[in-house]
Amino acid sequence: MGWGTLITRRLKVFSLALFVYFDYKAVQKRVQWVSTVKKNAIWAKTHERNARRVLKLMIELEGLWVKMGQYLSTRADVLPEPYIEVLKQLQDSLPPRPLEEVCGTIEKELGKPMRQLFATFDVDPLATASIAQVHRATLEDGREVVVKVQHDGIKEIILEDLKNAKSLIEWIAWAEPQYDFNPMIDEWCKEAPKELDFNHEAENTRTVSKNLSRKTEGGSGGVSSDVDVLIPEIIQSTEKILILEYMDGIRLHDNDSLEEYGVDKKRLVEEITRAYAHQIYIDGFFNGDPHPGNFLVSKEPPHKPILLDFGLTKRISQSMKQALAKMFLSCAEGDQVALLSAFAEMGLKLRVDMPQQSMEIASIFFRQSTTATEAKENIKALNEQRERNAKALQEKMKLNKKEVKHFNPVDAFPGDAIIFMRVLNLLRGLSASLNVRIVYLDIMRPFAESTLLGSLTRGPSTNSEWIYDSPVNSEVESKLRSLLLEMGSDKILGLQVCAYKDGKVIIDTAAGTLGKYDPRPVQPDSLFPVFSVTKGITAGMVHWLVDQGKLKYEETVADIWPKFGTNKKELIKVQCTIFSIIHLVYIMLWEMWSKPILCRYVIGKRC
Image (tube, rainbow, N blue to C red):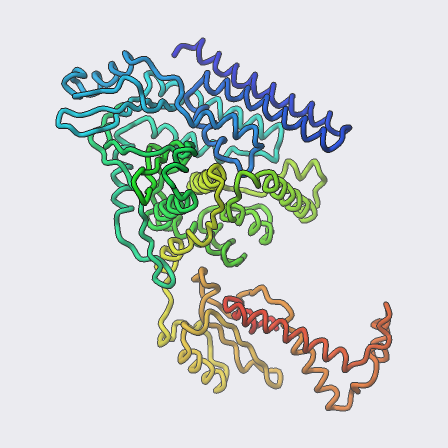
């Protein structure tokens, strides 16, 4: 590809980006002065015309831009409907490459003429994608296969498109700082070139097929982690040619055929999600490009998913796999401490300490999927959450509105997590495009638990190391520790006990772990997110003061504490305060004991 072509592609990309950007800015100003009904109509027309502009350029440029359009077309949960409808066309075949080019590449790569390679070769391709074209054929031995042929000159185009995409993302981050996607494009620039070597894809396909065919046991309760999917067998590969077993299937966007064959779309997406949960949490080796075009559905019952195209496949380390599992499970349990621990383990560094907002943002990736018909409400809810988080960040950092726009709370983002989040987003888009609702927490939990709980080294109930090694302060503490060892880790998750007598410490014991999915040991100075723990102590102290004759139940609190008598509280008596405290303690304990995971908060040294 000559310099003239490269410059032309870049100019076209940035010209359209500027055109679309200023179009939206102009409409943003215009709709301030119109009614809500008219405003919605104006925005709908704006989205549609810009989506068509984007589609036209993507089809013209092909290469990386088609892959980006395919990704965007699956995000019915976050993108306006006109973009989904228009860009969905990219899931279908692109204009095919000339047969002469295809045959020339095959003969050059395999070193034989077509007549010696295939008994039959379909002239019309099954599909034409951004990088390659697929034809159905029959080998000399009678086996039916598909032949994937890389487009001539596509490598130079993809590498140039990556540069253009990087420059475009940097410009967007400068113009609209709240939309900084640099970490994502950096990871994509690193991984995308691997798709251009079909030997690499062949090896990936064999590895994933072998991994998913293994029989495994899941996490708690012995839930099976087996998956029921089909993957074509690899016959032969070179850098630009891939020959695979032919599998007859239905494309996911062919809704009429799915209905005709009676495919259960909800079960289909659930099984695909299970397959990816297995790849991520069990194998640590997963396909990073699960867009609808990379799946088929077998025509024979029970209509199993057929997984295709393993060019963009990511391998993660054991520690990253465990960190991702901990992140998932901490979101499922609402455990902010474990979530921040998972962030640290995976290398995600934050510039500000905001656990609640971190939990809300992380939970977005694992929330129940929404159907395409609920997309508008979902987008609205996400925008409202983004505004709340921005406001909380502004108050925390004492920034003005302009400064908070330019403030990035993330200091370092691990590249391995980028592809992981892309997979979750694509799976969410897949369920939205098929108009089904999926509860990801239920489907993925057994796989995450299998990885994390299998890696935690919890001491047995007879192991004295389960109790934190600190001096024994009294005979009472010695008995307590013996009791704890007798009860064991099966009954106690984590615990702190501290007691004083006559001004001296007689008990200062810590045991267990910080959380169900956080294996760090509880220490005497470990902090727990406790609440309402002093109410019982306060009530006990008041009763003691009454016994000592210092207080009377019948006297008003305002007689003892004059400032308490404001806001019509002057008639409240000591006994009413005690009853209120006891009632609150009862509610607190009921809430805690109805949720066993929180029982570790009942006793804390900070009491």
